[in-house]
Image (cartoon, rainbow, N blue to C red; front, side, top):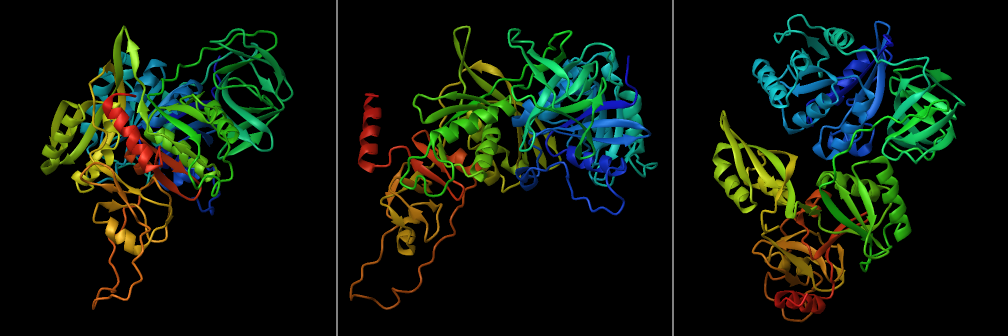
Length: 611
């Protein structure tokens, strides 16, 4: 039995291939907005961080109506670090729109998301987007997509997937690459209705609904989102919550409120039928992966297994001299509650208590995954410290193994030699190298830890022209030691306020991270030493007030503009004997041991092998 009035579809692609822009245009042409309504770009990216960075971080639900059929659309993230969002929402849909850039072609995340869709046997409609680009090459990209299908062992039906050519920015689509007959997205809407199957299920059977997403609302509490697989759901219904992987985990509950998605809004309804994607309130103990069943038949649905985290960082209470002066939430209880609450929403995130009561081990899918969490906590008023990220080493059949990433680089031809040298130092193995005009596309297999700090180096080496993409490939035997960074740290000698005279003398030793007037403490990292090794500098040093002055000596001292580190830059920079202090107002790098004498003594013990 099918519900022909509904289509459930997810939009999947590599980062920046135009998913959110396409959803924007589909909503406009699906009459979600008034004719005179001003609609901002990327309206689905509602999170402040998403709008700032121009990326989608959280999967989001919306819908539009075309020819009397409701199309439920799920916009998904494109960055590999947020792949867990994609994996879980694919259980809610019956087909996907695979977006591919008309110039770039299939990219690392394209392979990842397509593999997940094929594994679930979902119908695929390939959308070649950005056809308005002057350097678009649709015919070659179509061939590359078909090659990707073959590499992923697609069956004959999947190989015959429909292709639509589109420009999300202009809001036009066509079934042919010349785009001559295109004036709107009608060809895309028609293809969705024809190729994406209507949801199936028995409306008269007992209720079954898999929870694929969860969020919190200040007014109604926890909201659980999922697709009704069978039966009907209605407001006030008594249900049983169960889990496929934990059969003993069962409890009764009651649906207090019921919502469906209409455009960008959640609209309350009294009941909903099979195939609809709904949002239910009143189930405070429900988790992602649970199944909501009718009382007459309790039968859980199997949930997709989310890929394991690959890196970890230790979050701890801030104990620097400036602790508690800039944040609202500073205690271990605040930190613990926030981290465990985040782990409930984000299945890719794992949180465990650390060795002491004031530290917690947080595992995620990549540096960006954890940096987004850190930035969100910072904006919410939290003050804490984090350690250097470390990859998760596994013991596989008695062999010490580490995560290996498949790295894709696109660099100018004259930078290839420099990049190859850097890859050699970081244990990267060249897989493929293809010339592309005056640029070179390279593919490497490299340990995940070899990528720490590499992005900033690549941008420097290629004068900002290098493009980098990576995705997890596999676990392989440990490749040996890799030097994390070649530079050392400039460390503040004493507490105080940075003075121009002190900074002028310190800048001779390296590049500074701070400006005059910045408050510092002993052991705080204030710059980098390009020659390697740590140097203690006194940035608070004042000029002696004596009567001896030579002509011109008191002219204004010229300072080199400081190198201001972003949060990601700081995470890449810190070494294993350093911490990152995070507050709502500042991001500071500091030594784990602040006292210079104790730090040198500890280093001596390490060199002698005593610890």
